[in-house]
Amino acid sequence: MTDPANLIVFMTATLALNLTPGPDMLYVIARSVGQGQKAGVVSALGIGAGCLAHTFAAAFGLSALLMSSAVAYDVVKYAGAVYLIYLGVRALISKSQFEQQSELKPASLSSIFYQGVVTNVLNPKVALFFLAFLPQFAKAENGSIAWQIIFLGFLFNVSGTLVNIVVALLGGRIGEALKQRPAFAQMQRWLTGGVFIALGLRLALAKRS
Image 1 (cartoon, rainbow, N blue to C red):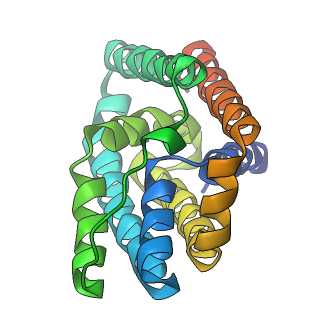
Image 2 (image 1 turned 135 degrees about the horizontal axis):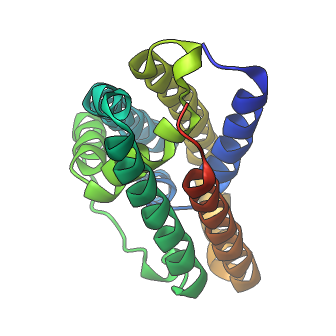
């Protein structure tokens, strides 16, 4: 489906991004701290379900476009590169997301799952991220672009969901540690920003297969 070297780069970036605290992880922590481990795990599964929708949208919405012409390919490539670099710069200069976290009201497990799905699916920033991130690892010589994006999106989603489940199980301790260690929050911003900028530059320099 994809060559080993490309897959190693993808999984390295995926693990770095999924281990970096962001809005999804904060949502899981808030649910876990507020309502217990089960609520945190359900919220993680809801977020994972939402990510699947973005994966299929990226796969079938972009596969034909990427293969249609060099102009279309370049438009998508540079738009994605600019967006990733923008995310990186914003992460470097913004305040910690931990400082902006608000408490969530108690809810049923079904509502928590549904909220996780809807929040993720309706977040345009998540959609743009998938459109910018996944296609740069899909190569025409490796077969169907659409199926490559689905495969890569599935790997990204499994990794992220497993990380969020672990976060849910350790939610209380992780939440307190993140709030009490501003140095960790700063390191998190630099890690996130560096990964996004590196991915954006990699995408901008990539050649059409």
